[in-house]
Amino acid sequence: MLNLIDLISNDILLWYGRKLKGILLTMNNNADQISVDMLIILENVERLSILSRGDIFNFFFNRLKNTNEFKEYVLKNKKSPKLNGIIISETEISYNVLKILYMILEGYILYDPENILYKKKEEIKANKIKIVNYKQNRLIDLGKVKKGEVLEL
Image (tube, rainbow, N blue to C red):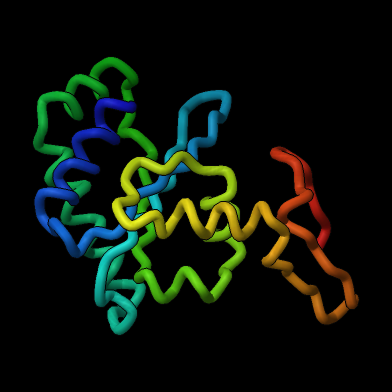
């Protein structure tokens, strides 16, 4: 799986060059298969719809499908890898979407030339970001949430 992540990451980097601002991944190890979520930060995608961003990721995933490494993975595991992509802009990181914050806090930074992801991770860890549930007037301090801990919202 790591080989496939390397291939798709390099493909995205070669395609976008300096417009690629970061790649981060989180891995979930289920009983039957590893699931990987990739956070990809690109310049000027804030005006693109979610569907268009999905098309961008699918373009690279389809290119990955044509590689020998992908075919070997499928033959060995008897199923396609679970590889999901979320594409956002640098500006959209500041929106503090819970899924994105969780990915940044728990994920592995693969590419971050301008330290955008690293700075956001440090901001979360320093307890500068708080998620408020207005309906029940509860505050969730993401800096103190432990890995694997379940919170009722």
